[in-house]
Amino acid sequence: MEFKEILRRRRSVRKFSPQPLPDAVVDRLVDEALTAPSARNTRSTRLLIVDDPALLARMSDMRDYGSAFLKNAPLAVVVLGETASCDLWRENAAIVATTLQLACVDEGLASCWVHIHGRPRRKDAPDGERAADYLRTFLPIPDNCEPLCALAVGYSDFTPADLPPFDKSEKIVRVQ
Ligand SMILES: Cc1cc2nc3c(=O)[nH]c(=O)nc-3n(C[C@H](O)[C@H](O)[C@H](O)COP(=O)(O)O)c2cc1C
Image 1 (cartoon, helix red, strand yellow):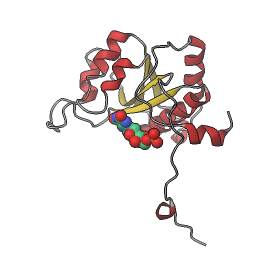
Image 2: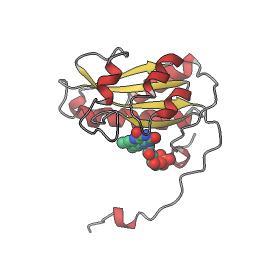
Image 3: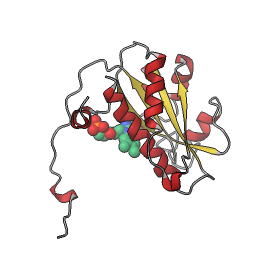
């Protein structure tokens, strides 16, 4: 797919068909995601692939807002950063996550980011249990890694609209 079309067609999708992802497609996605650049080439990002429906259901309960749709996704990729490898592990992980979302579009797949790092499980208890700590109780997240986000990935259950145009003029300053 042409790059401009990939940019236009990337939308956050939260409703997936039950169609599973072929292993070869998953292999390509993670391979392409890990081509992302990293600070000082530290490559501090790791990916945890989850397709067990029972685990996805437990993951969907990581927060009481913005994560429920994970239970109906055929697959999730948890994006982890090795925190001691690089002070910019968050930035490195975010670039890998974004690259993976673009690779999904190229494969005819859809995705949505579910944020983990720094988020509480319950919106009305901002200082209570962290989503990351909850996930550590049942996912094999190494001690030296911190999850940044999970990407729900699957075939969309509908045809998402292209990215709508928006006024970018206030976002861009051109100094000449
Ligand atoms: C850093 C970041 C965190 C996000 N966290 C969530 C989230 O926790 N739950 C969710 O449903 N969507 C989440 N999103 C998706 C955004 O809501 C979505 O990208 C935005 O509404 C724009 O829609 P679009 O991706 O279709 O252009 C997140 C996106 C980013 C980049």
